[in-house]
Image 1 (tube, rainbow, N blue to C red):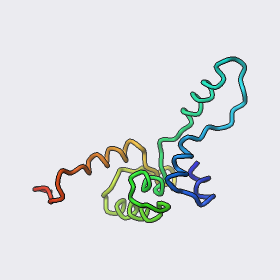
Image 2: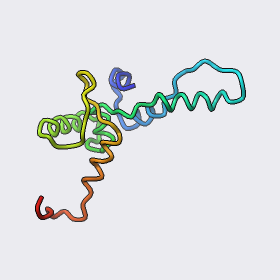
Image 3: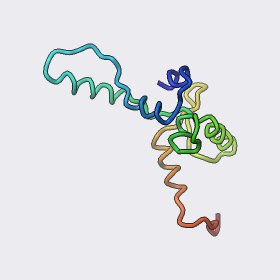
Image 4: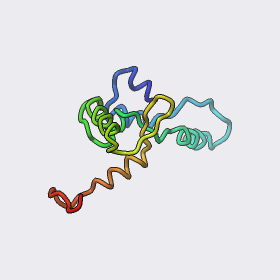
Length: 117
């Protein structure tokens, strides 16, 4: 999915949303439950992992194609800041739960710097 988005040069919020609703082509199975079987299998195939560009878009760090936000995430990784990430081989990926957890930790009630921080 991620490779297809990058190959076509359309890693955008719309492309990300479209990719998340992707249903693979499955051969039809006999019976009335054909559609529910397809949906169940498609939901199992959805990946909870995001590329740095997709993670930047998910966190709304970048309003464009995600490249600027991906650079921000790269800087944060080198500084030990930002959301937790994983290395799958040589690819950096972010798990949706890690992005949500990090975002929740960023919640503030004031723009003033908190004491002790």
